[in-house]
Length: 65
Image 1 (cartoon, rainbow, N blue to C red):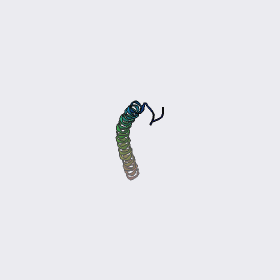
Image 2 (image 1 turned 30 degrees about the horizontal axis):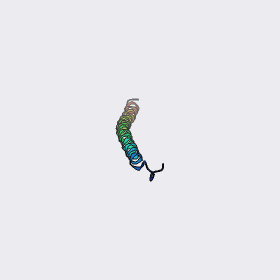
Image 3 (image 1 turned 180 degrees about the vertical axis):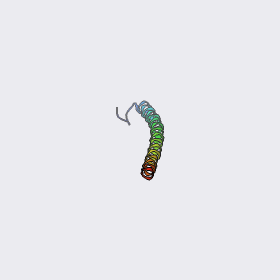
Image 4 (image 1 turned 120 degrees about the vertical axis):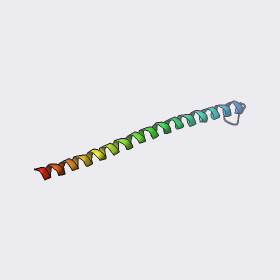
């Protein structure tokens, strides 16, 4: 039956369980996303520092040469 049929309680229980399951999956994905975002931020910082170091090296080489 549909949501308002004879099995209403059982179906609503299943809907509730499914919603809880989805909520847990979303929370887990949010944790993974936060970790990946932090990782990406760290890599961006490293890349920026490396780029700055490369420019400084080029400047130093130009002064020496």
